[in-house]
Length: 233
Length: 93
Image (cartoon, rainbow over all chains, first blue to last red; front, side):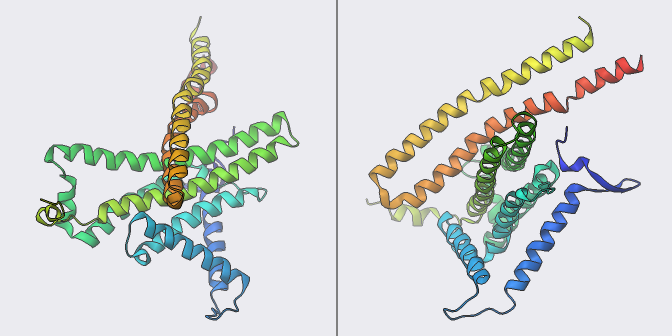
């Protein structure tokens, strides 16, 4: 049973394997990068713009607004990372309608890699914003007894990110595959549509959760005196 | 009953029960979450963007519990390590 694109191997040499996950990831990366480069070759500032530039502007301003609503005050710093997460997972989901395409996020390797990059990015942005000592002190807040729980929650939410995306993508592909052997005409199309919907929602969830974790890490701690001044006597 | 039968019966029964029982709790709590979101939307329609976004994030977190159960069921049915081990044993004999 075809459970993951890791199992389709195109070429093997020793322990280096070129499997379907790597091939489709690179194909998607090349399409996204080359497409964006082509569209942004001649940008126009006025009201007359090409359709594709309009599409990209809608995408970028939409993501920027979402990042700002989550609580990050300088969305441009994080737009590259969070926007790429969203666009990559959404493109994965949309391209499943292309026959022969096996979404690389249906393999635990890709989703684990994405979750690991979020795991590394959260301390990176936190230290960049607050400084190393302040960021490490935030692990011992509100009391030092919470230190192991904070560390465990950091690890478990990375795991949850990876497994959530993997489970959604893999089960979508598998349900369509199973239905094709049972009722091959109309019902698989309906399930593919449902798979598209859940794929887009999962892309949004992945990037919003990453934004929320980064916002929690970069939130500067107000000094206690300043906080108490707000309370009326 | 020999080893093969025990492994097969256990895998099949547990695969069915895992998703069947595991989907009850998250379904109930998702219903409560949507009901609370609808109440909040009715009381404050101008905060609908925040409420909708928080609703979707909450639903995804609850949904991931069911996804874990589905994952276990799919693993038990399709890539069961105990089954392959038992098959290899009987094939080797």
